[in-house]
Length: 131
Image 1 (cartoon, rainbow, N blue to C red):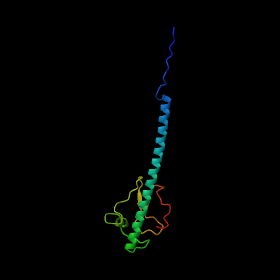
Image 2: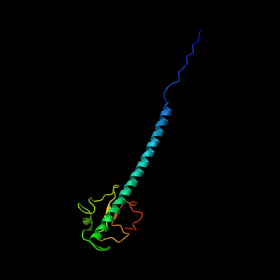
Image 3: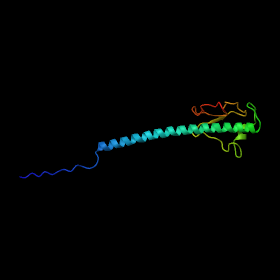
Image 4: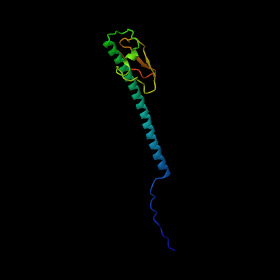
């Protein structure tokens, strides 16, 4: 009797464990990407909100200088005089993170006081000293 040994060729492909590990690593990388994207979105929303606050402040200062108002002076419909078509700010500013803006009324704010505020806590400029 003669024994014939066949050489087994190594199997090609990946085992189930290897495939599972590759999928787990890819899912981990995707999760890190989403966490980074959420952080980026929050930061950009905050920056846009602060930019809106600064733009309204500049519009208030421009309006006050143009019509020779001083800080503390009362102006009827101050907000409507700076926001609207053919005015200092064309469109009503909105917080992209869903915050609500509060205007300081009809009084020209003193230097260092913001006229517009957002109700989201971290949407506050670091300093308004030069405003």
